[in-house]
Length: 110
Image (cartoon, helix red, strand yellow):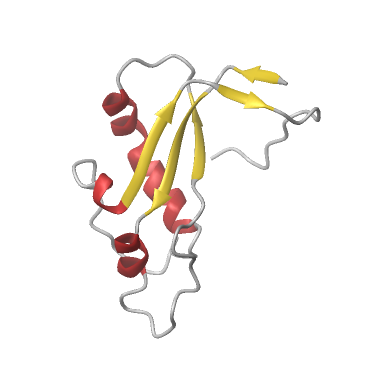
């Protein structure tokens, strides 16, 4: 087991996010009632959760909407720093453990 020099932001969409992104769609979303969280790795040392969330919230919203194929189709969600907790369950932490012995590999940088 390796301890990584990263913190994390764990983000789980709430039902209101799912309904909002599919409100103009004619198809029913095949989404579990409790979608699994996405983990966003961040700097290891941070002291104020709100400062970190403010720094990354736009990238998080982009990442979450891209998972549902909404990156360039005109859906405009009114999610901002002040209301992000209305759409997502969010938690932050500073301990990241790698239980896999293989080296980490990234697909691409954003």
